[in-house]
Length: 159
Image (cartoon, rainbow, N blue to C red):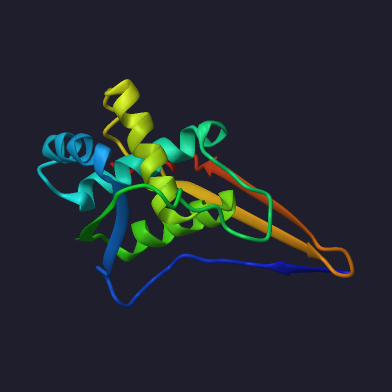
């Protein structure tokens, strides 16, 4: 027998939660440069990274175990405090959970990918559904995780 869990992301309170990422010191310069392109606002940069994560899930770190994969212990980690919309934070958390990694590790991986390409993604945000499936088999210690991203088709235009 297996147990299924369903996660939904529709936060109402707080609208802009206090958030923190731990970023390795050697990447703080890159983060500052990237934030400058987004008006020094993490609330604008995080949705950009979420769009990248949706389109490149195959390049992101993942782990199919019960435990979450975290950053290495020996890194010189520096806290980055910010506020973003609750929906963006919840979506980011769902993507990290679906990959089996910590949110900090996912952020650092996306930051490094962004630093490699230094290309701007399309500024128009696309509506998507993110599906996270976790199946835990009872009796055997086995976890099966699946993360699916589906773009929604635009509806008829209102004139």
